[in-house]
Length: 205
Image (cartoon, rainbow, N blue to C red; front, top):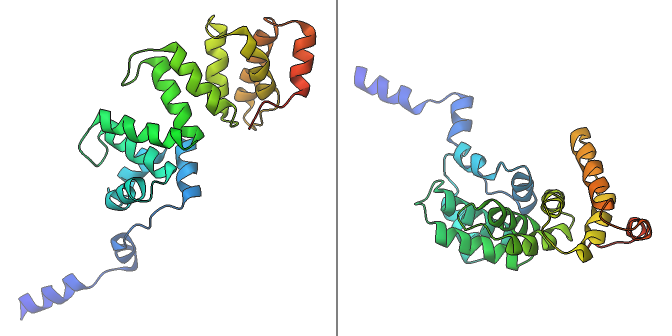
């Protein structure tokens, strides 16, 4: 009798426990892109206790969704909820970038800039960051401006980046100040009439 009662108690769950036992729903594309932009996508996978691995893999490989290709690639590269495979991870990140995902372009450009997983290659970094910057990726624009400040890149590309930074939108005061400082540094490398023209131009996609 005692064993039977314990069995019945084991079947009873509180509302909170029932909620915890519910399966995690797969992210919408907008939700995932929001997580990626805030660099919270990998931590969210861990918080969800790796329940979505198969769904993520299917959307990356079978559906070829760029946001999920990026996520799957990052998971493989860092070994989050899956066996670590840097080469395959970078492959899927490149697939996402090839489909025009600005976050993928920015991340690959960042990796080439800092030498993460790959050797430092400033030329490659600039190629990917320029593509992401033209898609209004603010992180890429800021990183690219810092690279130009270090003496890399072509002066012919300065007006486009100045224009992108001039039209950038942010409600973060620190970022706003950083953009203004980078604009001043870029402006010091260009004639005044070029700077004025860049303010009026639109170099985004």
